[in-house]
Image (cartoon, rainbow, N blue to C red; front, side, top):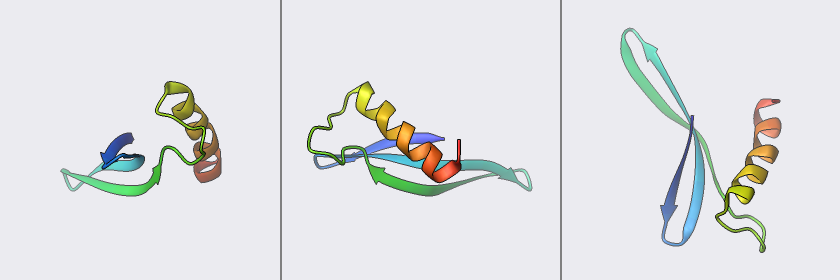
Length: 62
């Protein structure tokens, strides 16, 4: 699952896991990274798409 958060003026995207174990919901933070890494990045859908296009193959091989 992907989610986002903001701290001060920094925006982050988080990768989370959710599953059931013994009937109980378990959640965990797998990783978090700043959404804007380059000077020309902004908070647009284009920047998010480019971020995911780099992150998903690198981290998950998809």
